[in-house]
Structures are given as C-alpha cells and as structure tokens.
Image (cartoon, rainbow, N blue to C red; front, side):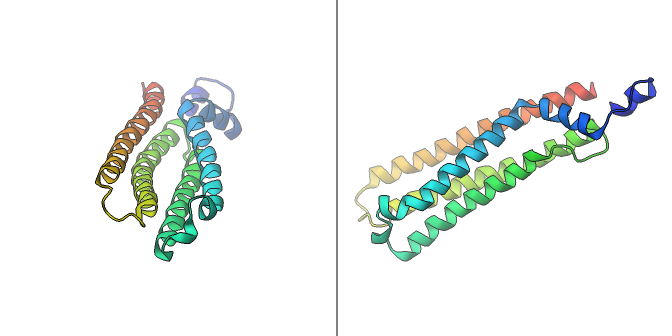
Length: 173
C-alpha cells in the first residue's frame, strides 16, 4: 500500500505514520491489551492474598506450588500476549506486517486457550485438594465450567482473529 501510494506520486510515509495507522486499524488489539493488563493485575492480587483468604496454609505444599505455578503461567502468558500486541509492525509494508501479526495472534490464541484451561483446572484442583471425594456434583460442575471456558475462549479468539483478518483483506483487496 505504501509503495503503491508513493509510486503514484504521494508523499513519503514515515514509519511512525504507518505505526499510527496500524494501531488504529484493529480495535481488537486495544481490547486484547486492556484485557491482558486487567487480568494481570487481578491475578497478581489473587496471588498476594490466596494464602490467607483461601486457607493456603491448610493445603498441602504441592497444591500451593501448583497454584502459584498456574498463576505465574497466566502472568507469563499475559506478558507474552502484551508483547505480541504491542508491536504489530514487523515488516516492510502494511500488508506483510498485518499478515505476520495475524499469524502471531493465531498461534498465540492456541497458547492462550491451553494455558488458561490448564491454569483454571489447576486452581480448581487446589480448592478441591482437601475434599474427601464425596463432592462428585461439585467436581462435575467445575469440569463443566472448564469446558464452557474452552468454548467461550475459542469464540472470543475467533472473533478477534476475524477482525484482524477483515482489516488484512480490506488492504489486499
């Protein structure tokens, strides 16, 4: 797009101008960033208070370690996501940058869904770690929540990817 515009006698576009255009294009990018920042703050708070608020001191050490590792996984995942969304420009022109960005968020969406499901299952296991096994209904309900979350996360990411894909298709049309 940039080279076609310049060949037609248009003014030179700076990298900063292109960056501003890229940041304005997909609204999904802003929503992803906001979600990542908010979630990271909330998970950080959870990690600071779980030991006292949720009786972490009464749970076996291994379950505390699993819980902390799960939250750290979520925080790492959010940091990675923020880095991916922070810089959508990575190529010489808008089209190749958007194509690379689309590929990155497709891969990231799979990692996002998997890490969230693993983390939420680990958090549920932490809370059930002292259960005596007679709470079959609760375990089934938590399993249903994990399945629902997988479905919901898949839909959210599909919508986001389609939003970026539409911008890409508009530029290549």
